[in-house]
Length: 337
Image 1 (cartoon, rainbow, N blue to C red):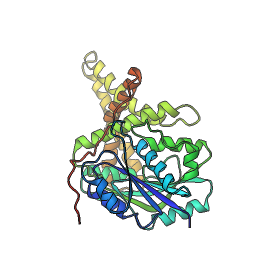
Image 2 (tube, one colour):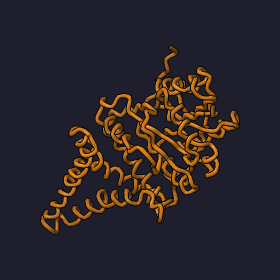
Image 3 (cartoon, rainbow, N blue to C red):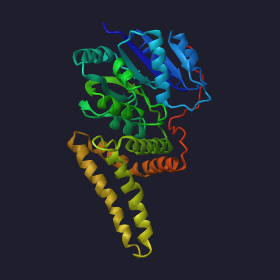
Image 4 (cartoon, rainbow, N blue to C red):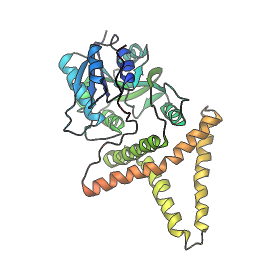
Protein backbone atom coordinates (compact mmCIF):
# COMPACT_ATOMS: atom_id res chain seq x y z
CA UNK A 1 0.00 0.00 0.00
CA UNK A 2 1.28 3.45 -0.93
CA UNK A 3 2.22 5.78 1.93
CA UNK A 4 -0.25 8.67 2.15
CA UNK A 5 0.02 11.93 4.07
CA UNK A 6 -2.53 14.67 4.55
CA UNK A 7 -2.17 18.41 5.04
CA UNK A 8 -5.13 20.43 6.34
CA UNK A 9 -5.08 24.20 6.68
CA UNK A 10 -7.39 26.56 8.54
CA UNK A 11 -8.09 29.41 10.89
CA UNK A 12 -10.94 29.57 13.38
CA UNK A 13 -12.83 26.76 11.65
CA UNK A 14 -14.46 25.64 14.89
CA UNK A 15 -16.41 22.39 14.74
CA UNK A 16 -15.76 22.20 11.01
CA UNK A 17 -12.14 21.41 11.82
CA UNK A 18 -13.18 18.55 14.09
CA UNK A 19 -15.22 17.06 11.25
CA UNK A 20 -12.32 17.54 8.85
CA UNK A 21 -9.63 15.89 10.97
CA UNK A 22 -11.87 13.15 12.35
CA UNK A 23 -12.66 12.08 8.80
CA UNK A 24 -9.01 11.35 7.98
CA UNK A 25 -6.96 10.49 11.08
CA UNK A 26 -7.53 6.76 10.62
CA UNK A 27 -7.17 6.76 6.83
CA UNK A 28 -3.65 8.08 6.24
CA UNK A 29 -0.16 7.50 7.59
CA UNK A 30 0.42 11.05 8.79
CA UNK A 31 -1.78 14.14 9.28
CA UNK A 32 -0.45 17.68 9.58
CA UNK A 33 -2.67 20.63 10.44
CA UNK A 34 -1.39 24.14 9.66
CA UNK A 35 -2.98 26.90 11.70
CA UNK A 36 -2.97 30.55 10.62
CA UNK A 37 -3.50 32.28 13.95
CA UNK A 38 -6.69 30.69 15.30
CA UNK A 39 -8.12 31.96 18.57
CA UNK A 40 -10.94 29.42 18.92
CA UNK A 41 -9.05 26.42 20.28
CA UNK A 42 -8.33 24.85 16.88
CA UNK A 43 -4.72 24.07 17.77
CA UNK A 44 -5.66 22.27 20.97
CA UNK A 45 -8.42 20.39 19.16
CA UNK A 46 -6.05 19.15 16.46
CA UNK A 47 -3.49 17.98 19.01
CA UNK A 48 -6.18 16.18 21.03
CA UNK A 49 -6.88 14.11 17.91
CA UNK A 50 -3.22 13.12 17.61
CA UNK A 51 -2.55 15.46 14.71
CA UNK A 52 0.78 17.24 14.25
CA UNK A 53 0.27 21.02 14.28
CA UNK A 54 2.27 23.73 12.54
CA UNK A 55 1.54 27.25 13.81
CA UNK A 56 2.51 29.86 11.24
CA UNK A 57 4.61 32.84 12.26
CA UNK A 58 2.16 35.72 12.80
CA UNK A 59 4.70 38.31 11.63
CA UNK A 60 4.64 37.01 8.05
CA UNK A 61 1.50 37.59 5.93
CA UNK A 62 -0.75 34.54 5.76
CA UNK A 63 -1.63 32.86 2.46
CA UNK A 64 -3.17 29.47 1.85
CA UNK A 65 -0.22 28.66 -0.41
CA UNK A 66 2.24 29.47 2.35
CA UNK A 67 0.28 27.28 4.77
CA UNK A 68 0.19 24.34 2.38
CA UNK A 69 3.93 24.60 1.74
CA UNK A 70 4.62 24.66 5.48
CA UNK A 71 2.40 21.64 6.03
CA UNK A 72 3.99 19.77 3.14
CA UNK A 73 7.50 20.45 4.46
CA UNK A 74 6.52 19.22 7.92
CA UNK A 75 4.90 16.13 6.45
CA UNK A 76 8.11 15.21 4.64
CA UNK A 77 10.10 15.75 7.83
CA UNK A 78 7.85 13.31 9.67
CA UNK A 79 7.33 10.83 6.84
CA UNK A 80 10.04 11.22 4.17
CA UNK A 81 8.86 8.14 2.30
CA UNK A 82 5.30 9.36 1.77
CA UNK A 83 4.30 8.97 -1.88
CA UNK A 84 1.02 10.89 -2.05
CA UNK A 85 -0.30 13.92 -0.18
CA UNK A 86 -3.94 14.88 0.18
CA UNK A 87 -4.51 18.59 0.67
CA UNK A 88 -7.78 19.68 2.25
CA UNK A 89 -9.22 22.88 3.62
CA UNK A 90 -10.19 22.88 7.28
CA UNK A 91 -13.84 23.54 6.46
CA UNK A 92 -14.10 20.29 4.47
CA UNK A 93 -14.77 16.69 5.47
CA UNK A 94 -13.11 13.97 3.39
CA UNK A 95 -15.72 11.49 2.19
CA UNK A 96 -15.22 7.85 3.13
CA UNK A 97 -13.84 5.87 0.21
CA UNK A 98 -12.25 8.82 -1.57
CA UNK A 99 -8.64 8.16 -0.64
CA UNK A 100 -8.51 4.47 -1.71
CA UNK A 101 -10.17 5.40 -4.99
CA UNK A 102 -7.82 8.32 -5.66
CA UNK A 103 -4.68 6.35 -4.73
CA UNK A 104 -5.71 3.49 -6.99
CA UNK A 105 -6.01 5.90 -9.93
CA UNK A 106 -2.58 7.44 -9.33
CA UNK A 107 -1.07 3.96 -8.99
CA UNK A 108 -2.65 2.97 -12.30
CA UNK A 109 -1.67 6.12 -14.22
CA UNK A 110 1.96 7.12 -13.59
CA UNK A 111 1.60 10.26 -15.75
CA UNK A 112 -1.20 11.61 -13.56
CA UNK A 113 0.15 13.92 -10.87
CA UNK A 114 -3.09 15.24 -9.33
CA UNK A 115 -6.54 13.73 -8.91
CA UNK A 116 -9.58 15.42 -7.46
CA UNK A 117 -13.23 14.45 -7.22
CA UNK A 118 -16.59 15.98 -6.47
CA UNK A 119 -16.66 18.64 -3.76
CA UNK A 120 -20.18 19.31 -2.50
CA UNK A 121 -21.69 21.78 -0.09
CA UNK A 122 -22.79 20.22 3.20
CA UNK A 123 -25.83 22.52 3.32
CA UNK A 124 -26.41 23.51 -0.31
CA UNK A 125 -29.92 24.82 0.23
CA UNK A 126 -29.27 26.76 3.44
CA UNK A 127 -28.70 30.01 1.52
CA UNK A 128 -28.55 31.05 -2.15
CA UNK A 129 -24.84 31.70 -1.68
CA UNK A 130 -24.20 28.14 -0.52
CA UNK A 131 -26.17 26.94 -3.53
CA UNK A 132 -24.00 29.01 -5.85
CA UNK A 133 -20.90 27.38 -4.36
CA UNK A 134 -22.36 23.92 -4.87
CA UNK A 135 -23.12 24.68 -8.52
CA UNK A 136 -19.61 26.04 -9.05
CA UNK A 137 -18.06 22.86 -7.63
CA UNK A 138 -19.89 20.81 -10.28
CA UNK A 139 -17.16 20.77 -12.93
CA UNK A 140 -16.63 18.26 -15.78
CA UNK A 141 -15.17 14.81 -15.18
CA UNK A 142 -11.96 13.83 -16.96
CA UNK A 143 -8.67 15.50 -17.75
CA UNK A 144 -8.63 19.02 -16.34
CA UNK A 145 -6.41 22.06 -16.34
CA UNK A 146 -6.62 22.61 -12.61
CA UNK A 147 -7.85 21.37 -9.25
CA UNK A 148 -9.14 23.19 -6.19
CA UNK A 149 -7.91 23.27 -2.62
CA UNK A 150 -8.88 19.62 -2.05
CA UNK A 151 -6.81 17.19 -4.12
CA UNK A 152 -4.50 14.19 -3.90
CA UNK A 153 -1.07 14.90 -5.37
CA UNK A 154 2.02 12.91 -6.23
CA UNK A 155 4.76 14.05 -3.83
CA UNK A 156 7.60 13.77 -6.35
CA UNK A 157 5.74 15.91 -8.88
CA UNK A 158 4.99 18.59 -6.29
CA UNK A 159 8.64 18.67 -5.22
CA UNK A 160 9.79 18.91 -8.84
CA UNK A 161 7.98 22.24 -9.36
CA UNK A 162 8.84 23.72 -5.97
CA UNK A 163 5.40 23.50 -4.40
CA UNK A 164 2.86 26.30 -4.22
CA UNK A 165 3.68 29.93 -4.96
CA UNK A 166 3.54 31.40 -1.41
CA UNK A 167 3.04 34.98 -2.60
CA UNK A 168 -0.38 34.33 -4.15
CA UNK A 169 -3.36 35.38 -2.03
CA UNK A 170 -5.79 33.41 -4.22
CA UNK A 171 -5.79 31.06 -7.21
CA UNK A 172 -2.75 29.17 -5.93
CA UNK A 173 -3.97 25.70 -6.97
CA UNK A 174 -4.62 26.52 -10.67
CA UNK A 175 -1.28 28.32 -10.83
CA UNK A 176 0.45 25.25 -9.39
CA UNK A 177 -1.35 23.06 -11.91
CA UNK A 178 -0.05 25.21 -14.76
CA UNK A 179 3.50 24.42 -13.67
CA UNK A 180 2.72 20.74 -13.07
CA UNK A 181 1.31 20.40 -16.58
CA UNK A 182 4.27 22.25 -18.08
CA UNK A 183 6.44 19.67 -16.33
CA UNK A 184 4.64 16.84 -18.14
CA UNK A 185 2.01 15.91 -15.54
CA UNK A 186 -1.72 15.44 -16.01
CA UNK A 187 -4.59 16.58 -13.80
CA UNK A 188 -7.73 14.42 -13.60
CA UNK A 189 -11.12 14.94 -12.02
CA UNK A 190 -12.66 11.62 -11.05
CA UNK A 191 -16.33 10.72 -10.99
CA UNK A 192 -16.19 10.14 -7.22
CA UNK A 193 -17.30 11.93 -4.07
CA UNK A 194 -14.33 13.66 -2.47
CA UNK A 195 -15.23 16.25 0.18
CA UNK A 196 -18.11 18.01 1.90
CA UNK A 197 -17.53 21.75 2.16
CA UNK A 198 -19.24 24.01 4.68
CA UNK A 199 -19.23 27.51 3.20
CA UNK A 200 -21.41 29.12 5.88
CA UNK A 201 -22.18 32.00 3.55
CA UNK A 202 -25.24 33.80 4.84
CA UNK A 203 -24.72 37.39 3.67
CA UNK A 204 -24.46 39.18 0.36
CA UNK A 205 -21.25 40.83 1.54
CA UNK A 206 -19.57 37.44 1.89
CA UNK A 207 -20.49 36.49 -1.67
CA UNK A 208 -19.24 39.88 -2.90
CA UNK A 209 -15.85 39.48 -1.17
CA UNK A 210 -15.50 35.95 -2.50
CA UNK A 211 -16.08 37.30 -6.01
CA UNK A 212 -13.58 40.13 -5.44
CA UNK A 213 -11.01 37.52 -4.50
CA UNK A 214 -11.81 35.53 -7.64
CA UNK A 215 -11.34 38.62 -9.82
CA UNK A 216 -7.99 39.29 -8.19
CA UNK A 217 -6.94 35.67 -8.80
CA UNK A 218 -8.02 35.77 -12.46
CA UNK A 219 -6.05 38.96 -13.09
CA UNK A 220 -2.92 37.71 -11.35
CA UNK A 221 -3.12 34.31 -13.04
CA UNK A 222 -3.33 35.95 -16.47
CA UNK A 223 -0.44 38.24 -15.54
CA UNK A 224 1.77 35.27 -14.60
CA UNK A 225 0.83 32.72 -17.26
CA UNK A 226 -1.22 34.58 -19.85
CA UNK A 227 1.32 34.22 -22.65
CA UNK A 228 0.75 31.58 -25.39
CA UNK A 229 0.29 28.71 -25.46
CA UNK A 230 -1.10 28.54 -21.90
CA UNK A 231 -3.22 31.72 -21.97
CA UNK A 232 -4.07 31.03 -18.34
CA UNK A 233 -7.26 32.90 -17.35
CA UNK A 234 -6.87 35.40 -20.21
CA UNK A 235 -10.41 34.74 -21.46
CA UNK A 236 -11.86 35.11 -17.96
CA UNK A 237 -9.97 38.34 -17.29
CA UNK A 238 -11.06 39.85 -20.61
CA UNK A 239 -14.68 39.03 -19.81
CA UNK A 240 -14.34 40.72 -16.42
CA UNK A 241 -12.87 43.86 -17.98
CA UNK A 242 -15.48 44.04 -20.74
CA UNK A 243 -18.59 43.43 -18.63
CA UNK A 244 -17.41 44.76 -15.29
CA UNK A 245 -15.36 47.81 -16.32
CA UNK A 246 -15.50 48.87 -19.99
CA UNK A 247 -19.23 48.47 -20.64
CA UNK A 248 -20.42 50.21 -17.44
CA UNK A 249 -17.90 53.01 -18.06
CA UNK A 250 -19.11 53.42 -21.64
CA UNK A 251 -22.76 53.53 -20.60
CA UNK A 252 -22.15 56.12 -17.89
CA UNK A 253 -19.81 58.26 -19.99
CA UNK A 254 -22.26 58.48 -22.89
CA UNK A 255 -25.53 58.63 -20.96
CA UNK A 256 -25.63 62.47 -20.93
CA UNK A 257 -24.38 63.08 -24.51
CA UNK A 258 -26.83 60.49 -25.89
CA UNK A 259 -29.70 61.69 -23.66
CA UNK A 260 -29.95 58.26 -22.10
CA UNK A 261 -29.88 56.23 -25.31
CA UNK A 262 -26.70 54.48 -24.14
CA UNK A 263 -28.73 52.87 -21.36
CA UNK A 264 -30.03 50.49 -24.02
CA UNK A 265 -26.66 48.78 -23.75
CA UNK A 266 -27.74 47.51 -20.32
CA UNK A 267 -29.76 44.91 -22.24
CA UNK A 268 -26.49 43.11 -22.90
CA UNK A 269 -26.49 41.82 -19.32
CA UNK A 270 -29.86 39.99 -19.39
CA UNK A 271 -28.98 38.64 -22.83
CA UNK A 272 -25.76 37.20 -21.47
CA UNK A 273 -27.67 35.76 -18.52
CA UNK A 274 -30.09 34.08 -20.89
CA UNK A 275 -27.23 32.44 -22.81
CA UNK A 276 -25.77 31.08 -19.58
CA UNK A 277 -29.23 29.95 -18.46
CA UNK A 278 -29.69 27.94 -21.67
CA UNK A 279 -26.25 26.38 -21.28
CA UNK A 280 -26.97 25.41 -17.68
CA UNK A 281 -30.28 23.83 -18.70
CA UNK A 282 -28.50 21.96 -21.50
CA UNK A 283 -26.06 20.32 -19.08
CA UNK A 284 -28.89 19.11 -16.87
CA UNK A 285 -29.43 21.77 -14.24
CA UNK A 286 -32.94 22.54 -13.06
CA UNK A 287 -34.57 25.81 -14.20
CA UNK A 288 -34.21 27.22 -10.67
CA UNK A 289 -30.50 26.33 -10.48
CA UNK A 290 -29.93 27.56 -14.03
CA UNK A 291 -31.46 30.95 -13.17
CA UNK A 292 -29.38 31.28 -10.00
CA UNK A 293 -26.19 30.21 -11.78
CA UNK A 294 -26.69 32.68 -14.65
CA UNK A 295 -27.45 35.52 -12.24
CA UNK A 296 -24.34 34.71 -10.20
CA UNK A 297 -22.09 34.48 -13.27
CA UNK A 298 -23.07 37.90 -14.61
CA UNK A 299 -23.55 39.59 -11.25
CA UNK A 300 -20.07 38.50 -10.18
CA UNK A 301 -18.45 40.50 -12.99
CA UNK A 302 -18.72 43.68 -10.92
CA UNK A 303 -17.00 42.49 -7.72
CA UNK A 304 -14.56 40.56 -9.91
CA UNK A 305 -13.76 43.82 -11.68
CA UNK A 306 -13.07 45.36 -8.27
CA UNK A 307 -10.68 42.49 -7.54
CA UNK A 308 -8.94 42.83 -10.91
CA UNK A 309 -8.52 46.59 -10.43
CA UNK A 310 -7.13 45.93 -6.97
CA UNK A 311 -4.49 43.67 -8.52
CA UNK A 312 -3.57 46.15 -11.29
CA UNK A 313 -3.38 49.02 -8.79
CA UNK A 314 -1.10 46.95 -6.58
CA UNK A 315 1.19 46.18 -9.51
CA UNK A 316 1.32 49.87 -10.41
CA UNK A 317 2.26 50.85 -6.88
CA UNK A 318 4.43 47.76 -6.44
CA UNK A 319 2.48 46.98 -3.30
CA UNK A 320 1.05 43.46 -2.84
CA UNK A 321 -2.49 43.03 -1.59
CA UNK A 322 -3.42 41.55 1.75
CA UNK A 323 -5.76 38.59 2.07
CA UNK A 324 -9.32 38.92 0.79
CA UNK A 325 -11.38 36.81 3.20
CA UNK A 326 -15.10 36.21 2.88
CA UNK A 327 -15.84 33.58 5.53
CA UNK A 328 -14.11 34.90 8.63
CA UNK A 329 -16.26 33.77 11.52
CA UNK A 330 -16.28 35.12 15.04
CA UNK A 331 -14.20 32.58 16.94
CA UNK A 332 -16.15 30.53 19.45
CA UNK A 333 -14.89 27.89 21.89
CA UNK A 334 -14.82 24.40 20.42
CA UNK A 335 -16.93 21.81 22.17
CA UNK A 336 -15.02 19.30 24.27
CA UNK A 337 -17.46 16.52 23.37
